[in-house]
Amino acid sequence: MIEARGLARSFTTRHGTVEAVRGVDLSVAAGEIVGFLGPNGAGKTTTVRMLTTLLAPTAGTATVAGCDLRADPAGVRRGIGHVAQGGGTDPSVPVGEELDLQARLHGVPDRRARIAELCELLELTVPASRPSAALSGGQRRRLDIALGLVHRPRLLFLDEPTTGLDPQSRGNLWEHVRSMRDRDGTTVFLTTHYLDEADALCDRLLIIDRGGIVARGTPAELKRRVAGDVVTLELSGAGEPGPAGGEGAASSPASAASPASAAERARSALARHPAVREATVTGRTVRLTVQDGERELMGLVRSLDAAGVVLASVSLARPTLDDVFLAVTGRSLRDAAA
Image (cartoon, rainbow, N blue to C red; front, side, top):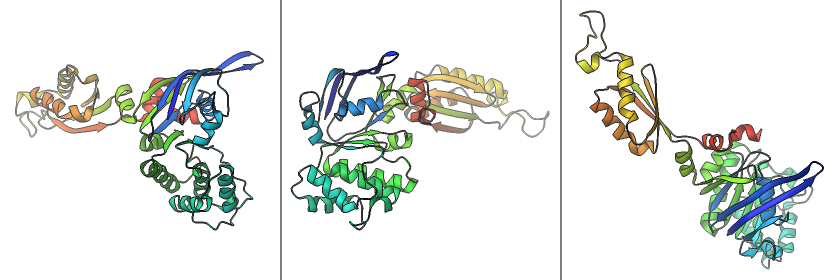
């Protein structure tokens, strides 16, 4: 649905030439929801503006919705929908008039039926005479999406679709985006600063920084590849030596070991495991960075058992997309969005 090779854009300023996008290569298959992440100034907006024909590329080639970006920009525009972050509605214009005008501009032959269908699918159950200024935030965003879908585009660009919405409205909008893909096969190219949104919605992610793609893959692949899983082991204190001859006296050599030596023995046994990237000890706690921790967890426990180490608890924590973003850009996306 999108094939871009060497896509670039530079701007001339008083201080010289600024390369906003530096030879971006990206592919988006039909029926995918692809998230496009990047800090402010990374080239994200410039890339989207080029792909939607709002800005001519300085170099490179791209095919969008089956049409050549340079040779047939009108064909690209016919095949895509674009929902900008700020929306495209006039606050004073009634909802029905907005939708009807958009359908007329695109030459939709069955525009009344199409408008009714979209209002039902997107739960935009408001009077057609109501101006968009009177809608709630969630209703206005669904109206924006309806305007972008009225001509049945195969590819929809969504720019920060849930900014400013309350959690319930965000969740509802996620369901609508998923249904567009699952029901109609609509391909979605999504920009967002919400990491939970990218994780929940997107089949694949592209991370751009300083004008180039620095990471790509499914959310799970990126988290495994960049950060690994964190396994935290708390060693048992049961059986440690108490007062001489008193309760809690050691019952075996393994249990008689001090907490420090038991933790070090655990670290030493686990550091040799091929899936363990890093092992650190703090008191009775051993913290591991593990590739594919869920799959390897039982093997780690068996290794400890063989070493005579008694566990009190085991926990597994997944890395977050912010961990990924920090690793590949040196910045937290939450900080970059501020």
